[in-house]
Amino acid sequence: MPVHNLDPTKWVDKYSDYLFNYTIVRVNDREIANDLISETFLAGLKSKKNFKGEASERTWLISILKRKIIDYYRRINSKKGKAEVHINYSDDYSDGEWLEEQVADASDRNAEDEMENTELGMAILECLDQLNEKQAAIFKMKTIDGADTEVICNEFNITPSNLWVIIHRSRVALAECMQKNWF
Amino acid sequence: MMFRNFSFLIDCSRAENCCDKAQYKELSKANKIRLLLHIAMCRRCKKYTTRNTRLTKLIKKSNLKSCSKVDKQVWKERIREEMAKKES
Image 1 (cartoon, rainbow over the protein chains, first blue to last red):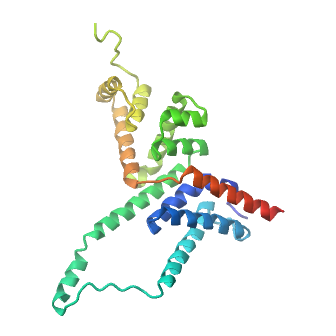
Image 2: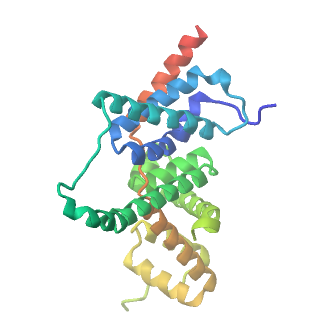
Image 3: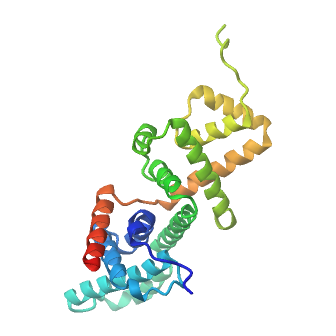
């Protein structure tokens, strides 16, 4: 018996930010990321009947998105027509330096940091999933988008006091959720 | 007197509220003093402040981005259209 059900009408509100952050670090282009997410939603709708309910909705959408990202790279590589090989050394004397440079690659640490930060971002969004939709939306608007208190209050028709109560509850829940792995 | 209406002492609930506002740089100077005085005396709120500040740093470090409202609206429309197509 399926444990999880699909509700495409809620996909955008619930998962678009998660899918976006997952994609942007992999393709590094906002427009391409948006296209891939759009394709993912449509592919999800098409293959809805294949969903067995064993994985969560989000995991299922991510598995579709992964394939879309792979397809995207295949597409651009086939457009180029050939694999690109970069050789920076023109003479035989620099052979030894090549190896040293590879070992001491200064960009390695940055790449590692970036991966860790991406992982962290995904963990935060997963924890935000545990909040109710309105709470999560308000928290994201205030904390990630940096929206003004007044703007959020107008949009959600709440008072500033309500907003701060929601922010407080969200922060407590989020810190609790992240306590184990990140604090 | 200058501090006639200025009460330095706040309770834990108000201290937490001040701490939350401080994470978004929306805390007045007077309330900053109140919060600092409170956490100097209250271990529980000091712990809350440490954890809350750490959370802010983690969120900043994660460099999270959100999709634009326009993009979200477009996706919602497309999903709605596709679902309507399937039903008809």
